[in-house]
Length: 352
Picture (cartoon, rainbow, N blue to C red):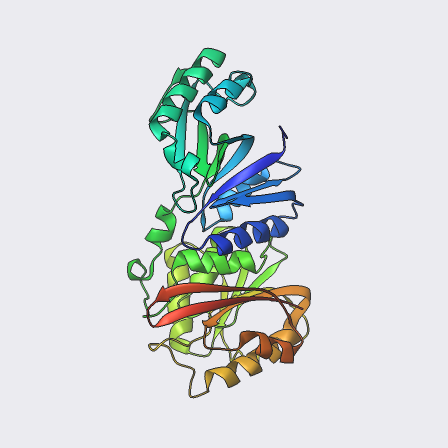
């Protein structure tokens, strides 16, 4: 049992992007990690400071839970209970109450995993912990929440240190904001873009969105404590972006500027997260998207600091890697994200 081992329960629809987001967040938080292991919707790794899980939970968009890892067991009901008899659960509890939750990841589940009883595990493990610690069970609001996840052929068990709440993302969706434009990114994906760009949460580090539109990426950056700058060629978008930021009590500098010719001297930008116009309801101001992107990449390479990142979303019909190579930026990651039958996004992460 490694006291510094943790695990993350990931979203199922975009599991690979969710894993990439966790690793990007750890890099942005200057938190080294090692011994990476994964199962279906589960990512395990070692970190030197488990308090970092709170920061990951604050930032993550495609994760359900961030957990302290107690142990991983084979999918054998009797063996799990037998081995748990030897665990000193007093080491892991906080407060005077607890609850046990068990989740089953149905994709790629082994026959042994399928036969495991969720309710049975919750009941029997709860009884062991109660006997071991003397704590009372509280299902509604426990001070310590134990979580077990059945995935593939293993049972991963630990305590929840942070839960990612979806409510905030839902409340910031476009139709609830004062300024709306069709085709904009969902807040959850905007947050993903910020995290993949390795944006740091301090006032001296600058996150830039040169196609800021209604402000989704700036909002999600500011929600986690980033210093953000936005620009757009459309003055209506600049006005609307400022309006949305003010509505949420956020303050960012937003200027009218052409992303192909930015009013920025030298390498002043630390990281870039952006979603250029390409949807039917968006406008490229008469420029073909491929040519717009080529000019944009060259300009971003000029203003981005050495080792800085760019996360960018485009339709999957665009040859993003070749466009990036022409500017001298190096492709680090490439992900596909299905949106609807007419659009699959390609999300590229480049580094200077």
